[in-house]
Image 1 (cartoon, rainbow, N blue to C red):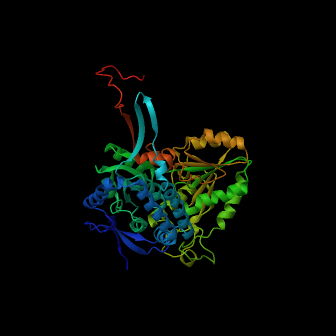
Image 2 (cartoon, rainbow, N blue to C red):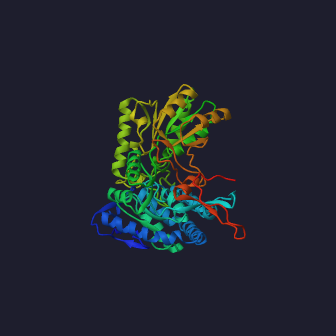
Image 3 (tube, rainbow, N blue to C red):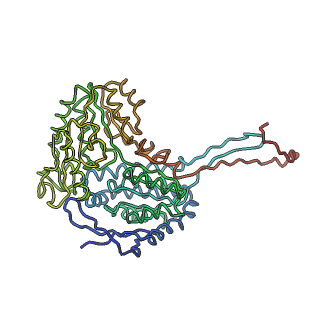
Length: 510
């Protein structure tokens, strides 16, 4: 028996008027676990209206009260994170421990947002001219739309909504229709934490819901994470309607391994960063650039570790041959087939298929014969003209490219149209410093394969990995969710004689 996963507006579930729904499946079994409501335009307008009605009252709420709600939400989420992780595993397919890790990273942004009274402090300059003082302040925008992808149904929304809410905005979250339940669970938790009705809302649906957020005059700003084509569309459409936009797009993240690197450390990192969450993350390492002469030895180590991975149902307590799964299935059958198509094309193009994930067994060994299984896949001798290299695959496919020198490796990374994340493995501090300065990528790891920054730094890439000029959370996130005012005041001394009169010239300081 499956139920309908509804919208959330003004503090309660909202079924809407649309009769359209979509199946939500468990990727490990293929079983339908629910149906999600697909918003009509009228439904979207109703949810947005809930946020708009609450905006003024929440903006006028004291920072002390807002912070108390944030702290309460943080404590509730931390105490019940396993409940949320089970929901994520059931609808997304990632293993339970990975789902817990996702929530932990989201909690870091909640904790950062708890410091909003300090983060929103303005500046003050006294007597900038005779009797004149100047001060600055930052104020909320109003309603902020958050459009999040399927791969992190809790963490990616938490990149945005804690900061937005703490700064005094209201939020409409549009989760992926593939795993929508986490968003409603979070909405209920906000209500339990004491957040006023209408401050956090959930709009379920597809492109109809997205377009409603992009076009509504009541939505002041939109935060988005997803593929580059959709990020470009969101940026262009929302900008056309005069909104602020931060649209984080796709990636093709390179890990460069220099000859002096610790190859065991590099191999561990490549496997962890390439196959974690089944490769369905924008910070996954999808290309390893092996600088001569380490290629053969590195590939051998990566292959050894890859063959030891266990693929199966990631649910809490599930086991594969007596051990918890390392990697779960892909999100849908269509996506599984899409990734398998890249594997077949890689073979046709002449890359060396070292490990074929299409051979991953179904049935008891993996978790369910009807699940969407594709195991870790490793290619060697990939070249930049191959689709394996050019496209964002968003699956557990790791491509090894050979380079003759540091310079050739750097040129390869910088020529790529994406600029989200990159890593360099080396024991040479000078080479690392040079790479930091020369690589054209927004987030860089040195002997760190997935350089996702802490919440007090901002997250985001360069080039086709970002549309707009604001990254998520950190200082840039605060500025995105607020707008500045500068106030100049003069309070004449009532005891002093009046001076001045009409002056048409440009004001000057004495």
